[in-house]
Length: 146
Image (tube, rainbow, N blue to C red):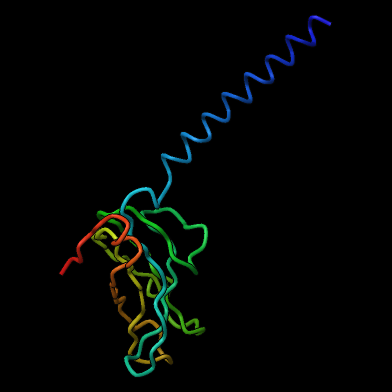
C-alpha cells in the first residue's frame, strides 16, 4: 500500500515537471510571439514567365511543409529552392539554387522561378517578392521597410 502511494506521487511529480518543460519549450519556439517573417512559394505568371519555386530548405533545415507559409525570425537566411517544369533536362544541380534573404520583421517573401522557356527548365533565376504582413505589423507596431 505504501509503495503504491510513492509510485503515484512519483508519477504526479513527473507529469507536473513535464508540463512545465513543455510550456517552456513552446514559448521558446513560438514563431508568432515576436515579429516574424514568412517564406512561401509564389504564384505562376505566364506574362512574367514565372512559376512557383519549391522551397527545399531554409538554413539547411527542411520545413514541415514547403507548400505553405514557413515562419522565420527576422534576419539573414539561406533558402535552397528548386524548379523544374517536369522535364528531366540537365543535371540536378541546375534545378537547385541558393538564395540569400535578409528577412525584415512582418514581411512575407514569395519565391518564384523566372524562366526563359519551359522547354529548357535549367535556364532560370529565383526571384523574391516581398509584402507587408498587416496583422503582424498591427500587433507589433512595425513600420514598413522601404
